[in-house]
Length: 199
Length: 120
Image (tube, rainbow over all chains, first blue to last red; front, side, top):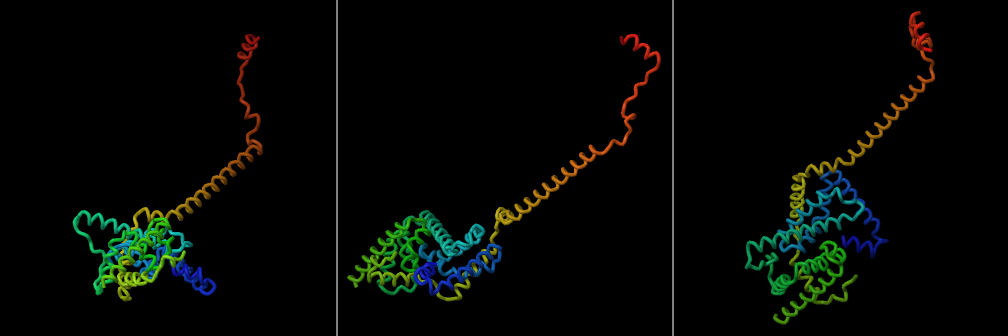
């Protein structure tokens, strides 16, 4: 979605027609899905599932939770499809639902962990191929960020969402997203500096 | 707005590290399977009577409006016919003769005499 917006803003004369076609195609799929055509909804899933996964993965702690959140998010979207206005950008609407599904899952996990494992600190990231010190430290540093800071830095720096889009997804003002990003980057830079001096 | 001002070379390293930590599965098989799981759950969704009702709201409103129009038209037509019949019945002459319409008062001689005497 962000890529599409960026292209539209900076390269509108060159790519606008294909972008418009893509939007029209997506709109047609949405309308068909609203009429109850499941194949159209499957096409929307196919189109958006990778980015939806990325949004969820930025918010939850593990790959497995991201998978669960993506499935929940698409189910919510399917149930709420009648209320979606096809002229709006479908991606923005869908990713907000994904973010909400992820935030719900994080809340549920916190409650469960508080009930079941009061004295343990969860290791948040799966990292089967972790091989170097830098990545290990980065992983540790991420656990020291707040959930929101971590989500904001991943959504912005990895996925390319704008502050406004991140604010809308996480339900925070754009300025807060900007400030979270600044603090998260500063914290990670400090860590990297320590690692470099240690190595 | 750009974040160039806040971005420095250390961030490249951070982003690169984050990218490896947050890498999504790249195999097409994985995504096909995930899509299948999502669609299988979508197929199981019991939408509930309110959703089903919601789907029928627009056709129901249209049907109700059509019914209302038809009823209104029928009532108007019936009223018109009634008025026409009333107007016609007023304009046409009565079928019975005037003499039969006036009640006859039978009087015999004695009664007439009594009336004459006491009526004064």
